[in-house]
Length: 294
Image (cartoon, rainbow, N blue to C red):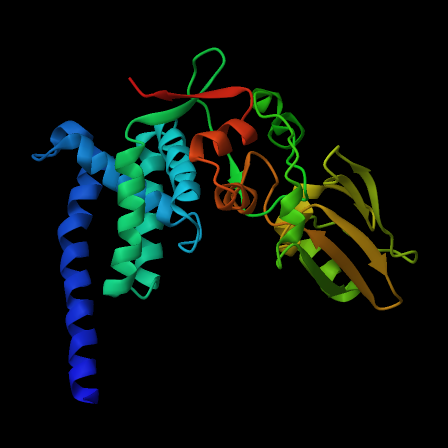
């Protein structure tokens, strides 16, 4: 029986390998040379590509309506990328699938992404001026998403802050991250050569935005943006409070990600209440509209 099970798993793995080997050159052709270079149905290929990208961006355990929303975001964001950037995204997507244990059960789950791509075929988000622009997303908000202009600059002013209170119910909502002063100094010096704590060892939040995310932090002799310290320390979120002891600093973080645009957890809670993907997208992008790409 064990031998038969092993043979079955081996057969499933070989099926996946063959599928990926057949698809990968085709997808690379789509990205590098464009859709016209492909000898088979172009629209279907693009939709399959969108499904793969979306699958690398969100939990496979989420409901179909949430996945549909993510597919629309993936399609929108791909539409504003250059060919070079699309190629990089494809490489990242291929690496994601390579690292995922894909068997027949997982292929069935991936089929949901393909269905979501077909059922939303061509749909993208547009600004009120009819422009396709980037539509960001993140894992879990602080309970309220952020104004795009506060995080990404004035060109993202079309993304406005909205309430997403049910994010606070996520079991992953709060996470404490601890660092010794020595570790903090070591990490900071990689980015700021003249960094020092001095005698006072200051770590203090100076400014937050309307959603509670840190805009500016003083750490030692350095003033730093909240998103930058999130990057340096690999914090789950820049929505945090700081507590210092004699030897350690605790960053108590709320949410996951930059907090701009769609909250995947928040969208999933809406889907579980029976909301469709278009309602989810309208909630998190009130200044944008869903339209078919021309």
